[in-house]
Length: 160
Image 1 (cartoon, one colour):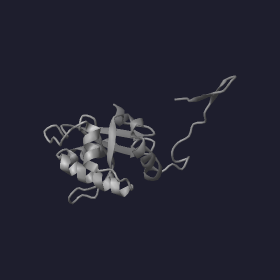
Image 2 (spheres, one colour):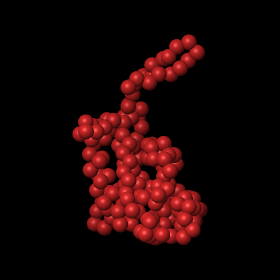
Image 3 (cartoon, rainbow, N blue to C red):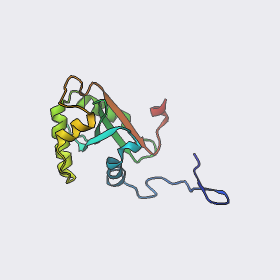
Image 4 (cartoon, rainbow, N blue to C red):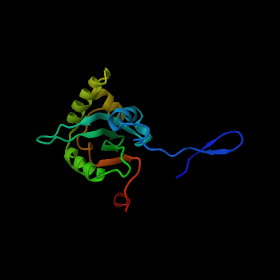
């Protein structure tokens, strides 16, 4: 799809490029920038972890793990490849792996994340405030897991 820049006299086409050509890295650039502006790809989401990999016997990591205003976990997978690879299968696997998470576990994960980015917020208080809850409610927590995929392009297999 063509993108144009508007100047005072005409529309100028913007030269097409890609992440690799611009030396934009997945973790060091896309993930780092999106974690603080997640609303760009997932509105009403709070990031509670980055590179989340607390799975027993598994060496896999979720790029960004969030929670939405309805208390559903949000698995966010990023790819800088031109076709998105097999990110949908990866994200489905991750969604299944976090689907039984409790509110207390989410608070623990969020606390570690906040410490890692040198943020002194109280994790539980912040999470309760985001959800607009007065107290933890495991009955309403994580009823669903959402998946957000972000890539330069998506293969036909993925969009079919």
